[in-house]
Length: 364
Image 1 (cartoon, one colour):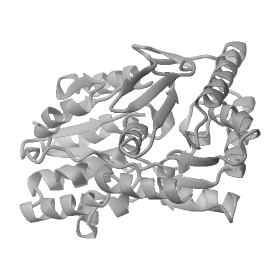
Image 2: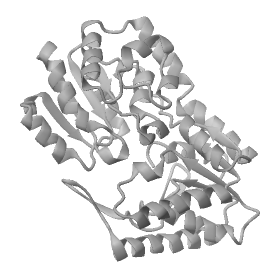
Image 3: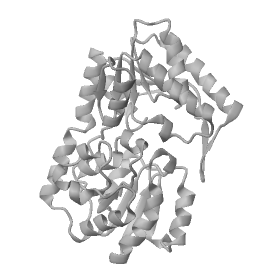
Image 4: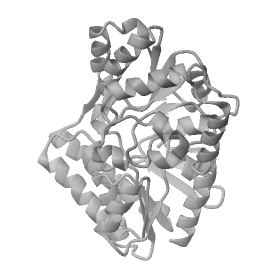
């Protein structure tokens, strides 16, 4: 919602009437009307998400299906954009679309949902698989956040107009420059199940500290595996080397990034990571702060080719991640290289991408 839906909604609202159906409270912000159509199928706890299962999950999703359907009948939109091809979203829109076939439907995909969600049964897998197929059939256009998703959905329906628009980033303040101190930062979800390989962080930090003992790591974000991570850091004697910031807002980014010398984006080569855009890599490019990640999915398109060798480690290879980090700490990138990163990021800023998105909406 924060990283993709809101930037698009706010921009489109300058030219069209925009309504967002979701699980937030009903309100209006920046000419965008928000409508509540249910509740999340989980509750947040200190140890992560507690997900609904069985009958409770079914009831929760059925309520959302009818709430979405009723909201669409009431609002009478000319076009519906489905962000996330989850069963309740797709079925709610599909029921409405059966009686409004002349209205346009755009599907927006930024994850491969079968691998990006923690599923507990074959029925859950089937329902997500079904929703993806149905969404493709009813779509007039599709927007994909990564080359993998573009190829995948083009294969599912060859005559479907598909557009590549990665998840952009709002242009940050120009006074963020990072620091040359030994401060590393990870920003984002700490849920391993959704492709964020935060479980690699403890060993990476331990290896880096063998060469740079004073290095520290800040983890900004939350998710299912915070407690697991804390135990791993404690086991390796790294408690004092880690700062936990918790969930953060865009307003807090300048302070967080001004203290960081390197952003870490540890990933593997799974389908989940091939399908995603990378918020951390996009953010690093926009600010001009080095990032250590792997050349998976769209990441190579977000960074200047001259810096690939310095920034990309072998996926899941903690020793190579540590090696890249140590090399960047001992030999920081130049001001010229920072400028190259920012120039590359211009094409992937929401200021540019929302114009492309609006063109898709108006031409679909």
